[in-house]
Length: 141
Image (cartoon, rainbow, N blue to C red; front, side, top):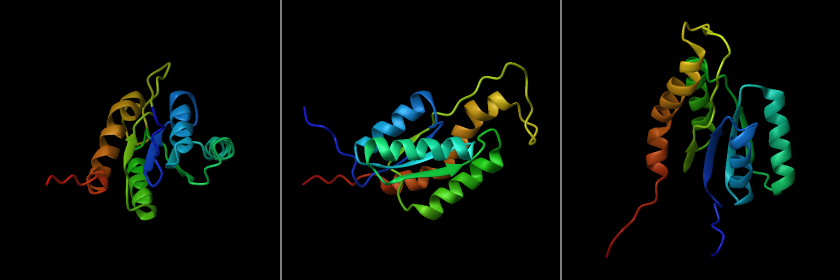
């Protein structure tokens, strides 16, 4: 079986600085994709970005910083992404959180609900037109 190339594809991965998200981002970069990492912590995001670039030799690894427990940050993330990129072929909503105690965000939302449910829904909704516009056109004839 031949390896699938993702050359020319743009991928956005939330929760990409550790665990499954980090491995996913690295593998997408390894297959030639432009990978946009999303991290709430700039230093951790920059370290992950540098590591993935070094390991994969793919220079097309970008970083956007956003706290996905804040819906205003999700909106800013979508705007920043669309300002930089015309296409989005793959969106991976991987970020998640489990808090040991109930935490309320500055927007008045319960943090677990915001990160695990509201943020992925809102981000997808804000980027759905970009995703649709990036879809391949199939013709029959």
